[in-house]
Length: 151
Image (cartoon, rainbow, N blue to C red; front, side):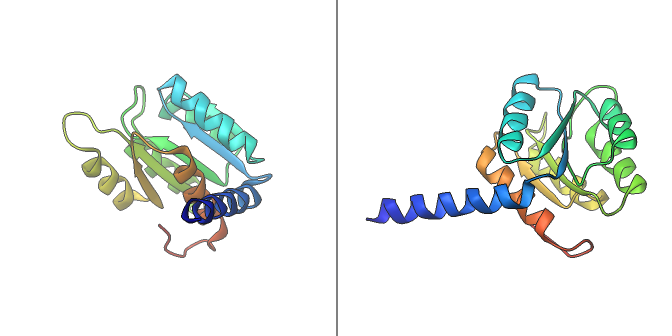
């Protein structure tokens, strides 16, 4: 019986995520191609219009050409790292919601994610991440009015 309650909650959360993400423009920036594909598939399945970029430089160019309501960006990437990308994205459009993701490098991901929040990320998630948690976080941010504090 307890398992069925958890399953019902998971299905309810998935439906809420799909409703909030349906038709939304989402830009995913990460140099890990496999993770990028997995995230893209999940956001696309939720009804989002998905754009992809392999680094911050390409991501910022895509954003300037076609602004997104939500950006998910890695922190450690070539050509333009995530902190610099977040600052540029928020400068271009302060209303854009940003989720920073990081697995860290020589220090823990929490250090990079805390810095990302300080420079403008609306939420942060450490790698390895659960895609369901990422979509729920994204849905929550898109449901929250601009300027309100979220996750």
